[in-house]
Image 1 (cartoon, rainbow, N blue to C red):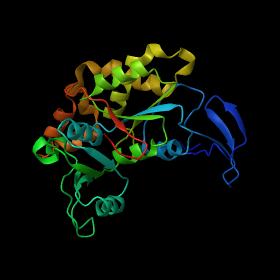
Image 2 (image 1 turned 45 degrees about the vertical axis):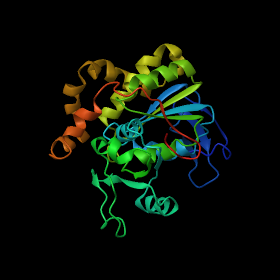
Image 3 (image 1 turned 90 degrees about the vertical axis):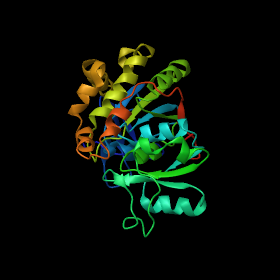
Length: 287
């Protein structure tokens, strides 16, 4: 089965299976296995192929933690710590331009292929900021509303919007996220990795593993999916040496090869420099 197989909880006949939930969809697709498993309490999604299933899953009893370490969630956390009022993540450039028309005072932010979105890509409008967290200084963002679209991170956030709570996390605010999760003790926890292009991202999986390890004792063995085991194992193997292990990450190597973006990698690997819990609210604003 393709990992992006989706499920409409209001339109199924099925039975539990070891891989998820077998769905007799009323469309042409026949029996399918959903990739978001409603029978476990701790799981990780790794790639954008999971976003569609996530968006169509009943997440009303679920907390989602979204990571796009290099660099979307790191930039959002930094912007808010430096005084931004709120951030509107959207999936596409067209949606960003429509939001700008609704909130004309907002700053347009985002990237495609790692670089700030240009007028050529955005119907004549140059975006104000790219996706480097180092751009989001207090001088630029204090008191501002931001509208942002990135290749994967903002899509991951939009896919998680139906969750009971959506947390925006990074290494910068990792401990604050962990402390909140341990206090809240969510019924179900899905660690959502933004990925790189359409693939899994080493750095996102590493961060998801850090969270999984920190809340491991809140869950029983039979309530933990293999995906969370994989993420945790990666963290236990590489978490003690973030700056060295990041060389395994395709996205890090790509950024390091671009002189003006190389410093973003070390910036995003800083641990716990920000003590703020960042959330996506039900109206779609990050604050």
